Image 1: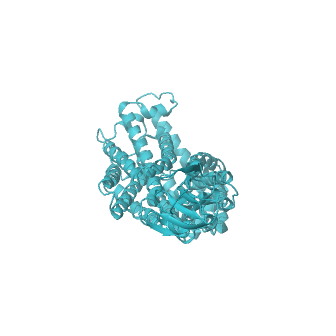
Image 2: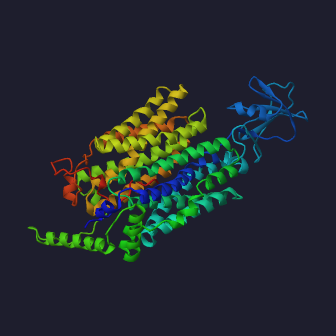
Amino acid sequence: MTVERLFDELGHFKRFQACLYFAAAFQAIACGIHYLSSVFLVETPNFVCSVPGNITHVLYENMTGSSLEDLLPVFRSGPMVVRTADGEQWELSRCRSALRIDPVDFTYDFYGNKTVQACSGNFIFDHSEVQQNIVTEWDLVCEREWLAKLCQPTFMLGVLIGALVFGDIADRVGRVRILMFTSLSQFVLGVLVAFSGNYYLFVVLRFLLAMVSSGYLVVVFVYVTEFTGSKVRTWTSMHVHAAFAVGIMVVALTGYLVRVWWIYQIILSTCTAPFLLFCWKFPETPFYLLAKGRYKDAQTLLDTIARFNGLESTLKAEQLVESGKSDKDTALIEREAGERPTQPEKKLSILDLFGSWRMAARTCTVWSIWFIGSLGYYVFSLGSVNLGGNQYMNLFLVGAVELPSYLVGCFAMDRIGRKMTCAPALLLAGVACILIIVVPEIEALAIALSMIGKFAIAIAFGLIYLYTCELYPTIIRSLAVGTGSMMCRVGSVVAPFCVYLADVWTYLPQVIVGILAFIIGVLTLCLPETLGQPLTNTLEEAESLGREPRTKQPAPRNRYAEDGLEMKP
């Protein structure tokens, strides 16, 4: 009896699994929300220094007004000239002000002497788009601007640490406990962020929120994988990302409707709260129960699944365990009976990923795909609000284009192959982004090209976990996926800094991603195709992929009974 027998008898994706899957995926929406909510929390609106006294007249280029709020929405560069009730004339810019000395007339141009001074922490902000966020509340501009720019990188650092911490704990205490803890923590910490009284508490709470959000996302992939059969595992695992994309769209919609940051934060943190009402009813996965020797609990769960799915099953937990032991014993006997004598087990390390020039080149290319997948994903998502046009619509579209990308990716990878899906996707992303250089003045076309880039990057990002599993042998497969996942998170930490390059040129982040994606796409063409190939067990077999014929089997996407698909950083 094999593990797949469990799903053959209980159903690969019937009522029981469907209920668990959609409930678990529903909470994944919260992960997408918290990952991207900062795009509006740290948005910097137009602002200028404030002046002492009441302002009576304002000049900006050839426009006039009676208050700064009248002209701030159109303010771009150059000073705004104001006159106060005391008769003083000031030239106001973003981080400094200049008092005109003995002006004769109130005109925009002035060639006399001025007293220039830096702003003393008092600013007037444009509230036409952003009524209140952390930038306007805590004056995170000028010499304090770096504090606002640090919010997203520290969040991504929390994502990296949370994935490592909770992934390990879930193997020790169980998947359900971590799902419950991280879900409750997302709700509590998300609400607490809204009531943080100062910037530093805000950053600390967001860091902790990042850890639990990342922890949930990592564990939920394992959870849904261990409840679904091989016939649907690729689809169910990849489409958890669709819930993440829905979270991005929720951020866009909420940001458009709510312009006060703490109300915005509370709404985003509570929109998935219904999950807390029934997550405590989630069962532990059968594989975890069997691995921990809890056979009675496993048997109860198997009977419950069968009853809920309306099936008759004679499946016994002890039989699954005995089958597993039997398979191991058989493999050992066959190995000992082989013509070659068994060799002492070698302790493997990261250096084995670079054991030959061929494997070294493969590893560098795979790591590059992980890196550009994560970098591109977050550059397109976080940078969408800087593209021009309606920033809320841009962010909504960035989430919406992901939904068809996973459908296309799943369909293509099992028909034309992993390599021929990943490489063209990266090349398409590269070409689309590089074309922005040609049409930077056509705003709508530049935005459309960015959306095409996000669509293509999402395809490559969605299949790299599975592709990595198939490119490496059993003895270092987990190591390969683990190191690739670390490169993925490095990309997510670097992404916010790349987005800030939009201050140099609006489309510079997209162009950088495009160039890298194109180069890595070309390198991907050098990787071997794994569609229809059996999984490799030794380094020699893995190295021979793509070099000599191997016995073909049906697509191996279903061979991972205990692996989930790619984890978002």
